[in-house]
Length: 281
Image 1 (cartoon, rainbow, N blue to C red):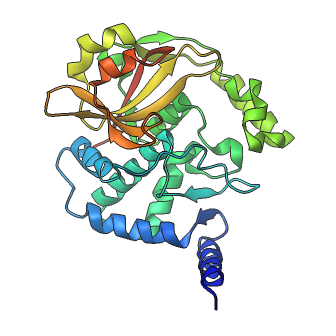
Image 2 (image 1 turned 90 degrees about the horizontal axis):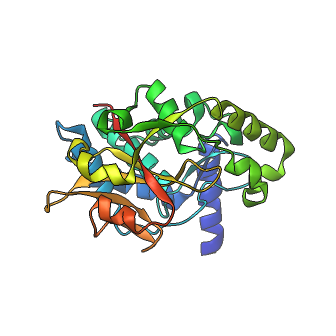
C-alpha cells in the first residue's frame, strides 16, 4: 500500500473511531498522546501555575487562523499542530483539567474539550459553539470551570451590541447556511440583553497586582459589533510583571509576550481593555 494510501486509511479510521462528531487526524492523535507524556508531573497545588506550565509546553506551535472551520457540518475539531488564540486557551485548559483529574485517555480529553467549547457542553451544530468570548466566559462560569473576576480587579460594566458575525456573514463559511445564520442572529439578540465588565486599558497597571498566573485574559475592542479580538493566559514572569502567554498573530506562534501586558496592549490599535477569568481550582 502506498504511503499516501496508508495515511488516508489512518485518517479515515481515526475519524470513524471518533464517532463522526470529531474531526481528528492520526497525527493529532499522536500529538495528543505525546502531550500527555510531556505534561506528566506538571501538576501543582496552585492550579494557575499548572495552567501556565502546560501552556508553555505549546511554545513555538504555529498560529493558524480558522482551525475549526472544517467540513460542511460542525464537529469537534482536534488540532494540536496549529492553534488560534481561542483554541490555544481551550486546549491548555482541557489538558490542565485532565491532568488534575488524573486522566490521560483520548475520550476523556475530547469530553472535556467539548464541554469547554460548546454551550452547556453540548455539540448541537455550528451555533452551539461559543463564538463570542463574553459568552464563552459566561457559559463556562455556569459550568463551574472558571470565574469571571473582571469586576473584582477593577472592571466596570458596559453594554455593547455584539453582532459582528450577523453583520459580516460573508466572513464565515458556515453562515452560508440559512439555518446557521438565523441561529447566530438569535444568539446575538440574546447577547444584546446582557452587559459585561471590562477593565479599561488605562486602569490595568494600577490593578495588575490582582491578576494571577493562569488567569485567562481576553482583549476587548472598540471595533463595532465585537466584544473581544484576542485571548491568552496571564503569566507573571521573572521581571515581576504580568505578561501574555498566547498564540500570537504577530509572530505566528505560541509565545510569551516580550513586553508586560500593560505595554503590549498599548501597541494594539482599538484595544479598550481586558476581561479576566480565573480557572476554578
